[in-house]
Length: 392
Image 1 (cartoon, rainbow, N blue to C red):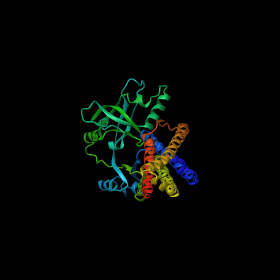
Image 2: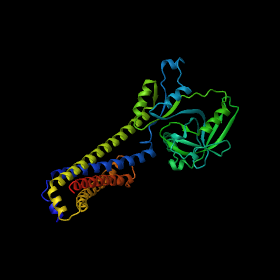
Image 3: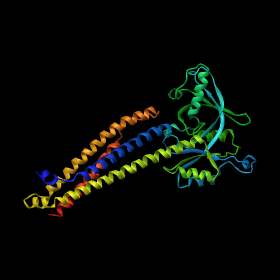
């Protein structure tokens, strides 16, 4: 009876427009939050959407080629870069050469080569801290290989008719690192094992303690110059890092710069979509609240009459509240079903594009639905209570 009295013969055009806006906003909001999280999870394991980290060095000019200018970084220059407001971390990349060879019978062909090894701060590596430690006397040296090295290794093995090696198998192969003094009088070998792979650095990485041990014991009189820095920008501020590099004559590998730009573009795009979706949900909720206010205003005579004949304001508030809660619950349900359909289509599209993300639902997606529903329920209750009690 109350439904017929309060809600019949109402102009539903504004309600329909608000429902469509809320449906679209919630659908885009949940979808964008879900894929922002999923693509970030994929990127953290594949160096796609992790922190914008690049290796930089000074540009080689005619002056530096003639030894008229330096290409290394002094401590003051490093501290200046660390203090920049758009840089989250900056650490020197220490380097030296050594002999790297296979030390395992799993690979029947012997190989070895002089390589350039470097060390970077553990903060830049997606490794457990305990895996990236070394002290004198340890049986093995943990190393991180560039994925390009694995490609070259497998190419070499294929040319010799030897089965190729996967990353997981490579971690079980033993290697040997040989240190030698410049005069060749001192030599020392250490067994090594692979603990991870990276796309950020093109050289073999060793722990900082091992690098210090090697430099202090086998080349103590050589000046250790820092010619490269590893820099991480703060989220959304890689453009400022690039601008600083251009102004101060710094450069990085083109592939690293392109990847960092891609990270910034994708991350910004997701945030823009989320922002627009939140605005759409907020505006549509405002329209629904305005429709409730208009509905109460149009039914003031009925509301007053019902209270005069014994209806308590709480029961009328509950009636308006339940009416709009059912409307918004239906919007949430339809938006979720649409999201589930879109997710199936988008997951397949990502898979076809070579981005194999986890297909499970994200907790934040459900959280966005719950927050949107709670926000509207609270707003509708406050609006209904205020409008009804004003006539009490």
